[in-house]
Length: 185
Image (cartoon, rainbow, N blue to C red):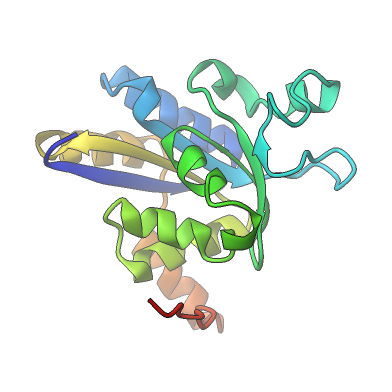
């Protein structure tokens, strides 16, 4: 999508994130451009290995249950993965492919890297990663520049947190972003 922006909202729960994604669809944003990333609250025994669910147990009851609520019909490509320091996640949509395609060895920093690739600053990406680590859910959508305001309004009205204000609250409580290991090259 030429001249596109990525608009992201942090929600306190998966149900709230689903409402955010539905609000985007109601505003006319294509379902295939919407991503949701949320903590995978299943036990380790129930969690499939990294990769698309249809390849790692989608035929099992646990795989069917992994279809994030009602969102299974909204977007395709559910990926289960674990990011060090964040924990197990379920991701659907374009970001799922970006993060899941990184493989196990690249998962550390994978979320921040994937968000940066979508034009999100490293600082803001760290805020979203912390929101996920604290049990939240992220909704992201790729939009043309002229629809950025519409997407932000839809997510805000659906209950997305003010990520900068939330990060200020975390910092006031003692949170500091984890130092990142920089790769050569």
